[in-house]
Image (cartoon, rainbow, N blue to C red; front, side):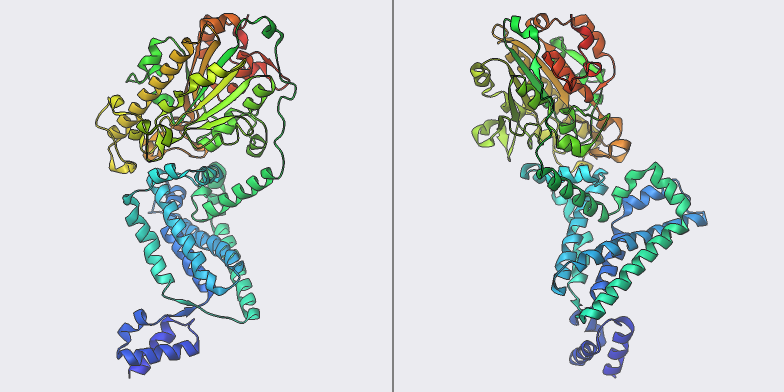
Length: 582
């Protein structure tokens, strides 16, 4: 009786199990004495294609809530068309991932690699969905490049116990099922045929589901192209491949020379002192919370007291460091944006170096992203200044340590770039010492959804206070050297930050749909009296220019203009100070 019941159970519910395997399972059921223990004790044998299909269905249903929410936004569930559209989207998601997984599994040398490969994808997808759901990020190529360039210290701040339940649910349960089955062995010819049929079926389902709702779906993709980067795990698989191909291509060829004819203008022959020019690159500072821009709180009291030139309307070149940093230092900029060309070309610093300036990049972050390649650079070492560093991260005060030695030893003109840690999230509370904890209560964890928005904003604003202090100290440093140098400071942030507006946190939203919180950044200039006199600048004119809309596109040409460097790549119309030089 047990034998008959077990055999019927297996034939009905495990049709892919081979006959010999069924016989073993029946034998196991006899030993157990009851078919109720069969599922746990027995290990079904399934084909690679069935595993791919099951995993694809799981991805479509469980891991694409962000995509489905996006494409179904504004639709009413009382309308039959909404149910048709949502069903087509689920079929499309399943078909897309079945195609991808089938192709990937075709590359593995043996069926025993099937479960390990699927396990890696399931775990990676669990982490991806966590960050997408918690912070509203899109996994496009620029974000994947940012992720791949993340250092250990930065990555550790994004990990927390809060993600454990999510990972256990989205990865633990699927892995338990995956590793309860065995992968069937098929003759090579049959496996080849079945694989081909699977690919054709997946392609047919994909085309059919899209044709069913083509008008609605095509309009949606035209207007909201970025939604495709919510299809998980296809988004990070595609983006990773794009980044890998791009980096491989760039590594195979030298950087394109920019400003080969760069030289200092003739006016340098009559200049009494060399120039000491500091470019401070901020991190994640947004214009909306910048005190000098009219924010309700004064987050920049020290700079306000120094009479700096404040630029209230500045647009960033990107929404993450990997995009913004190379872009803002390039001659190309956002107006003619070409990521491969920007990454494959020399930067502003190479042009200045060619014109005879000593250039130094000081970094309290994750590197210069190729901007300073081949030029002198200093990475802040936490071991050298333990009083300002913890957990592999250092406060920005470390950037000023030893800077006097650099200036003292400089022979001639010196341009120093200070790459700040600034307001790098999500642990804003770790970006400033206790003395700057003025706005309370603060969010003291990287798991921002555990904090109120007030706590998040307080911690963020405290970090801006510390940035204000560091910039004021840098200006004091430059003032002390006015007798020997014509000194100047230019500060601009790389991108902004979302602090919970519309459910968004951090940054990295695709540029086309990014909110102002992520694209509008503060910029400040301070020019010594000696600098303005020596370079023939009109302060009242500069003050008027500061009130106009500008962007990262102006950085390259404005620095060349301020330092009077002549080159064919310089564009006067993009130089903020061009109209203010006598």
